[in-house]
Image 1 (cartoon, rainbow, N blue to C red):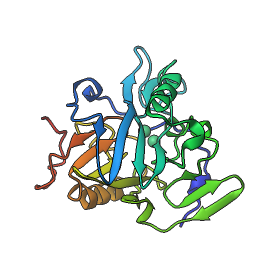
Image 2: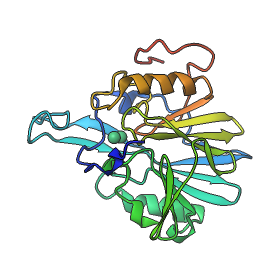
Image 3: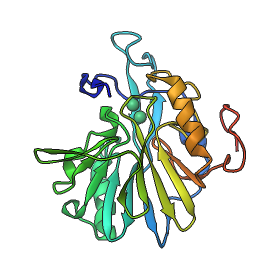
Image 4: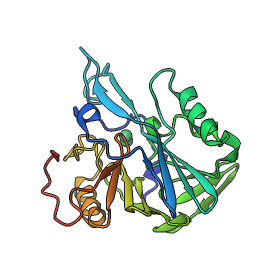
Length: 245
Ligand SMILES: [Zn+2]
Ligand SMILES: [Zn+2]
């Protein structure tokens, strides 16, 4: 495997102009499950900033506004936080308050998972002092960096699956809930299944391959700048176009 995860991570998360953050159909914010319970703590967004260049690196002074969807998974008596990244100003304490309302302190969190290494997905990694960080291939705790296999079941019914494309270091989660299997992924950013072509992706062919492989497995879909929805392509092939409900 290439060691390109060591490259400076200067690229803020890949960005796409999509109105879906506002228009996407909200299916659930909470899925109650006898297997794994998923709670959306904060809904992410991706938006242009007026008068500024949207795509990273296309000019020297581009700016964009984005945040990641922060979520909680409870399974087997363990607690996982996903994508504790950038959020809008003032929102992080509210996320902590939501956790406290559920009865979870930052010290209680057992794992933090990130779908890839861009800072918009990792900004608040340090907020959970006892939680190892899990990415596409390893678990990081204090000074110890431990590898895990692909298709790694980190919690009962919660599996980390490598899905390179946006970056080499991308993974997704397949989560067993009592409403079916949920695919939590950055392969699409938004609930309208955009961007179809990742404008800052490293390997579009790989992205398309893993999209095809995993979408059919999912009853529910959770793009990590969006929110939880039913998978409209559970029983049919995705046509590769933005999804319009
Ligand atoms: Zn990214
Ligand atoms: Zn992102």
